[in-house]
Length: 460
Image (tube, rainbow, N blue to C red; front, side):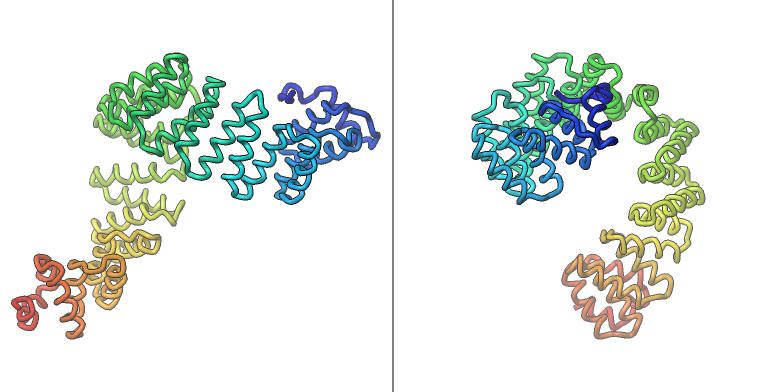
């Protein structure tokens, strides 16, 4: 028996806690100790559980179950050698106790010995009457080993024994997803639903599979059945909204997203999607209201700040866009997408130094897209910093070797710096990689392009 919340004040627990306060030693039978320990472990009160184990073993020194709780605490505290030793002694006494094998497998799993853990759990299967939990444990061990087919089979056996084991159902679908077996997942879920037609979880997962297959009409139908099965299922309304957006049925999408706001606390995702739908419908005032609500609800959600910034970019209101991206950066200065947007908006406003700073920060944060390197180089060139521009391009060449766009720029920069030997080297490389990109030289370095020295190299 497990203690539920309503059992908290039950007689045994109250008596035990009273004993701890008074230091009077009272007698409990072993089942009472097991329930008390189980309760404390479920509550995360390990210190109290250890006290109960100690007192329990003092009163019932031969109790295997109490010793198994002691093993569980050893494992929790990562004292695996002590756990191993105690289990070995218990195995000698009760070699047919399945719980000994389960704890042994738990230790092996913590030690990253998952194959051995699976082997031990299979031995436990031979002893167990109720095998659902064991198959679940075996499935998890297979997942640790990325053995998704085997994991899927184990979780399917769990579901065969307990059709309402939704954790196993989710794990089965997870395995199908990882293996890119969408059609097989659809077949499995449909078969499951033949026997469990009102399982909202299965309908929801079936809708996800159809969505991945871009069969939006069937996805919509699956989500409708999920909602019929449970009209308070927030996830089904959200997913249905996403499908309706794909079908450009924006008003219906808004309706479904709005239902979620009445069923639970507002989510930034729903508010963002409602804003996006209003924008698609040309309802800009409503759209921006919901974007404001999104960032108010979750200031750390980058998609909210990106949405409101891009909204003002599309409105050609660069100043407001810059205001909001600056607010976003003040909240999270490590977000590379924010810095790219910051750079692009400043570039549009012809604030070249700020734009260059934005691209530089994006690179520092790991944005190594070719476009980022090239635009930053061009900005540094415009700002009269050819040495910095060339250094930036040399760094870029480490990620994009033998790239004509980089080499033509380096050639132009070195000619401008009168470093003709380096310039000639990069120009020859550029022409060898892709001569058609010589237009870069013509557009960015017209004086260099027109010089006789360069023309003689180009014409060879």
